[in-house]
Amino acid sequence: MNHEQLILTLDTLETEQSVKKDGLLSESLKMVIGLSALYVVFFLLTENNIAALICCSFAIICFAILSLSTNKVIPFHLVKKLYPASVHFLIIGLILVTGGTDSAFIIWYGAVLCVAFFYGSLKRGKLWLILGAINVALVGLLEYYHIVSIPDLGNDQYKELTSYYSSFLFILYIGRNFYMYEKWHIQSLGESKNLTDEIVAQNEELKQYQEEIQTQNESLEKTQSILYSSLKYGRKIQSTLLDYSKLVKSSFDDAFIIERPRDIVSGDFYWCKETPTHLYLAVADCTGHGIPSAFLTLVGAANLHQATLIQKENDPSKVLEKLDQLILKDLNQGRNEGMDIGLLILDKKHNVGVYSGANTPLYIVRADELEEIKGSRNPIGDTRQNKKVFETTNIKLQKGDQVYITTDGFQDQFGGENDRKYLRKNLKNLLFNSKDLSMSEQCKLFEEEFDKWKGSNKQTDDILMVGFKY
Image (cartoon, rainbow, N blue to C red; front, side):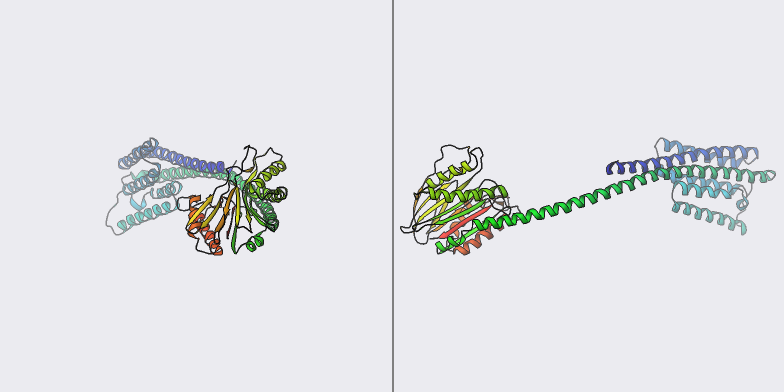
């Protein structure tokens, strides 16, 4: 039995016990109607017609209450109030016609207490007991001070018989009610005990489950800690192997690099190489995120270095073509992994740059304009595209030009008031509007703008941006 079934069983048991208790009340009503009929016969035989009339009226009232409750005309909780009240008024009526405090029917106040306690509550039983005591005391005071003379309409020769008869029927009534109530009580206790045992067993089972879950959580936390440490160490290795920050910053008067991995290790990387006459600068975005793309960054950087050694011409498009071939070869040509990349080759002597991009643009902010060199719409690797062509763009650089190569992580970040992408046009506006700041100030501004836009959202992609002032 699961937890939901156990709760349902408890609710069902409570309802069944309540129904059975209501059934006891109905049986008690039937019994008191029968006793009233016996009293009617007895009073008629002992020539006390008024008492017989009172008992007959009481029997009719009880029968009406039973019929109305059975047909659900009146709710059962109202019956629990009407029943003791009816018995109370019956006893008052009989006392007032059978001698007041000398009446043999005073003991029947115990029936009021019995009915109120068994079928109502202890509080209600106490209330009717107090009310009965007050009524008897009031009758006694009226008799004691001779304020009212309470008659005994019964025949004196039957007085002792009436007392015995009343006591016998009272004992029969109380005994029967005690028996029915105790039978219901024992049965209820048995059913409750069975359910209690079931609850104890369920609690033990739940406790065992909790211990197992706790053990699993501890194991998961340990595994997570190991994985997190491994990822951090992997990031350390990745950063060490792909750290060209000193070369980048020493090659320009002012430069910055923004790196923000989404999952500790990054799928974006930048690469820089210097020869006596040229400077190579690449920014790449490998397929996917996390550990798989982090492996691709190492493969990409190694092949990029090899491509520049093989390809003697200072033509970035030729380098990208060779890089594409090497990546396809390393990845067995049957996979769709690869990278988007932008490669800029600077001729330091003649202030000329040559750029080729694979789905990666280059931005130049010069004076009051921003120029975008989009590059080709072909990725590196990825066997789904054939006959790839990488275009080359020559750039005549001027003193003070601000050059940026960035992956798409910044512009694809979701955030803002409407939870949408930042978009390329907003990135271009951000680059242009910050042209009067130094590169270090721009770096700080861009990171602040990204954090503000992202807000509480999860970072969408790895972010990499390299900027320098020529």
